[in-house]
Image (cartoon, rainbow, N blue to C red; front, side, top):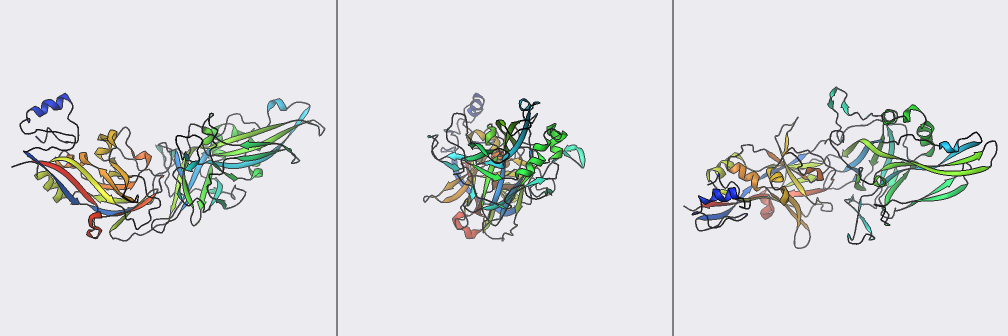
Length: 521
């Protein structure tokens, strides 16, 4: 029987399985999605302790060379209960083809053109969502901000002198990779006008006015800059603006548009190797920025606005003024770096789970004696769940909305990471779950993982692979796509303190609950 009905979590609906059950019809009077119950079978629950320990992370791969990573953390966040994190971004810039400061139509035998740079700034559109999704004109709210938006941290923009190579310099036959602890060389002083620019995100930053000027500073017009989610929207998206040195970008960019450095993207990448957005400070906030939206206006960029004044040659007579601007998207290869202040967590009744390169939990579900006993009982596994309760006395200001489980073979140098079976087999029904649950007072209370198929395979002896599990802050990239390989990425900085298996935790200790059916003797 156990080989025919391996897992009772599936609805018995197919013809094949219906035929297979006929031989057991005298034994079963009711087969449901989760529970087998009749006079010949008894359904019970088994509660097993698990072993959960802290598992600090040293670093993560954080580049987009071998896989597409569209979201990157920037900012500073500090909590007494977790590791302080300063997240910075290294990125190449993209250029348009055939950049020209002065249009061909303005260059004649009877004209001369003088250029005035009006402004240069780093543009960072904020990830936001509508407070009322049914009303496109409602107010925005930050989407995923962690920390205190009112507390500024220091932001500096540097020119990078590290060439982001897609091939490993030590072995050009292999794809390169960069990690969260890698160091990138800076060139010169900060590019921002105000060193240690006090960066504090604000939803009120929805517009910016550029004064267009002639070479003598005479204002000849104004441009109001707003960005929208679509052409049909009239609700401007808030964005950050960090002023950059105009004379530096005139020298590095505009004055070289006609030179080899701007002849192709490859030449430009070698000439100007990218920018470093470096965040520092004691506290502040973290935001995950999207670098690859379908609307290019919503992607981070460096914006250069300048005005050309066309004169009649040999005179001061103005023929016309031409307003121009060039956008340089933070595109190409990118790396997220995390400066984490290491904490040594005590060996007590808790485990700390923190995203980015913070910490995970290491979990032993079934020791060999428990597994052997489970197999000897010849039970039919109806349901298996793993529950972790939150220590509500710890910092719960930014707990993850979801946690995630994955498997590791334990190799410290080259670990093999894979998905838990239920993440794939139950993908259409929430996978392994792990969503945040609240108590009757609305406080963050617990996370529960559904691992029925995983436990069933072990109990039935269909697999002897009983690896250590890891628990982490959920990242959108964690969900399996086309295979069972797990790729450990994280731009989710949220953190939570969980109770482990220590008896001092009482009815809030970590527990594996197995519901099973056995045939009556």
